[in-house]
Length: 184
Image 1: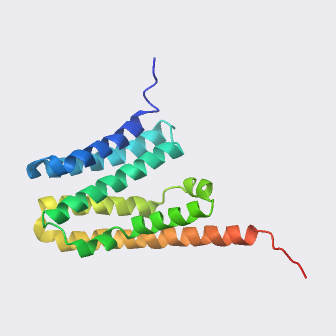
Image 2: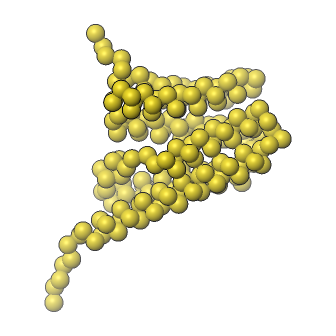
Image 3: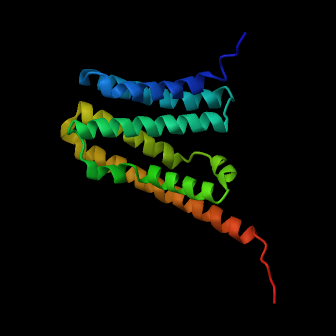
């Protein structure tokens, strides 16, 4: 018999990928429910993985990809439907852009193994939460969009700063640990 506990958190993450894929085709009257369901799945997958002690870097990667894909899809759909201005996207995605750039940089330097072991940060979880709150505000309280944008952007920028400090610390530690070649 297949043990379900180890796969349920990843299935919840994968479900967000499915929601992201169908989101553009679903009638607008269901968007709020899809966003809320995706947010609940995001909270549940991590909570269950920790509770059942089935945390893995692969599961964390699926979770992160699902989050990013869902957020990008919703932003794209909201932008096309004139619910969201394109110039806000870099602020709302500041953390995501920095992490993607850092991952690319480290991968080109052959340091992917170190990057994949980076644990999620509380500020990153708050940034993702801010993005989900923004989506709910856009759909349920459109007169409050500016407040939601400020909240999501602030959370994302703070998380980007936090991750940036972490990556700088990693690079400086790695650089100082590299033996110097003293040839005279």
